[in-house]
Amino acid sequence: MRSMSPLQNVHIKGFYGDYENKDVKNLIKVGEVKDLLIFQIVKYKKSNIKLEDIKIDNLNLSDKPHRVVFSNETRILWIGPNNWLLTSKNKKLITNIYHLFNDKDFAITDLSHSRAIIELEGEDAKEVLKKGCPYNFNELNESKCVNSIFNGITITIDMIHDSPKKIRLFSLRSFGESLHHSITDACLEFGYKNI
Amino acid sequence: MLYIFCPHCGLRSQNEFSYGGDATVKRPALNKEVSDEQWNNFVYNRKSPRGKHVELWQHISGCRQWIKVQRDTVTHEIFKTVEANKEI
Image (tube, rainbow over all chains, first blue to last red):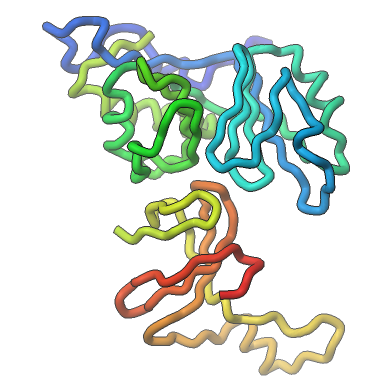
């Protein structure tokens, strides 16, 4: 069976908005991230396991709020107390994850096909998000993540790079198209390139 | 816009939260006889105080944790927020 990307019907490559007479390098780039392994990891309250003892792709689970620990292929986002979102391009991690996290201490859920992921790249990426999200983006630095809303849609924001600004947005798959419309609407005044 | 301090995430907009009711209501003790009046009070009857009130809120679009919020029902000023398993 062929898998369909959540934004297949709306994400069409090209230039949009106020892009004329502007340097292409300075335009916001909007991309869809596909084929990412996404796991929610929840540690049970009664669990006595130490987080330092667990390593996935040489990364520890961090209990610091909004912290992202990352390697070349894998990022682990803090999304709540004892709650993490693991994203990775390395599909081989699946077997490791089920082996590492025993079901007495952790609840593991595969969310790989239930999220739409949009990546924004460009100096105005934060300005776009400010239009629909009440979060104070001055506090969002590199390798920090935050859960918030964008025009009423619950999203997870992962700040991948500060310079150039690169931000990854996760939403429920069913909200993907709406989020894409909202984000691209907010991008129009800057001019953007769907990649 | 109302801002609520989440003990886990920091200062956030009220839009990210969902109201969860009066935090002062206590469930009748388990395995004990409960009168209809006690059960009615627990399930339905609520006071509508003017002034400071302790409420439950959930940071539904954030860390998804329940918190207790002490709020003035007249001015909407928020005095204190704590995790749901702690007392204000």
